[in-house]
Image (cartoon, rainbow, N blue to C red; front, side):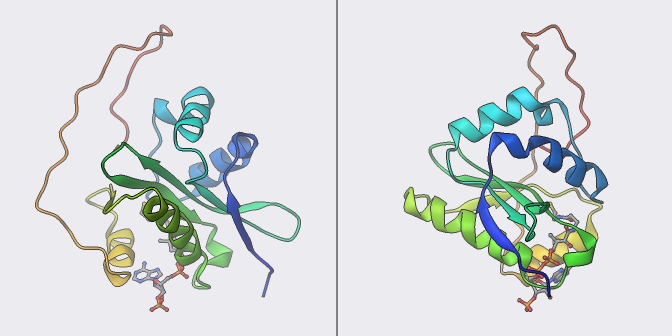
Length: 154
Ligand SMILES: CC(C)(COP(=O)(O)OP(=O)(O)OC[C@H]1O[C@@H](n2cnc3c(N)ncnc32)[C@H](O)[C@@H]1OP(=O)(O)O)[C@@H](O)C(=O)NCCC(=O)NCCS
């Protein structure tokens, strides 16, 4: 079995993360996944997000974790197909939940697409429960001249 290390996600991981996310089923990206907002997200949520790396430092898994001052959120949980079923996602989630708890956060939420049946089964298997809420969203104007598109669940 390949040696895997879970470590804090860094801004420099962006190119490898983008490749992983683009190759992962059930992962929908939007303009918030461009490099500048990605780096801002890491800065505002220092040390909460994690990557799983192989012996050569290659990025093989990820979880992006945020805290809004009230609740925690996990986004972009992904493990490269060849490495699935070996507890990598569990380790990534534990990394972020431990750090959220260390910040006094009492609950953590995830967004998952309604048609990601395998993903929902994963979260339920790992003790996450569906809540009776629906997400509603309003786009904001971009300040950099780009356009905001509704292409993602979050
Ligand atoms: C979901 C995903 C992250 C799981 O990664 P993984 O590294 O294979 O998961 P783990 O090996 O850590 O599994 C942890 C536990 O969940 C179980 N599990 C894994 N995938 C599962 C699934 N699709 N349904 C139900 N249980 C699942 C494992 O059997 C293991 O159970 P155990 O602790 O009882 O032995 C991976 O399949 C993936 O990247 N999927 C595509 C992206 C996605 O859908 N992400 C989640 C929604 S955002």
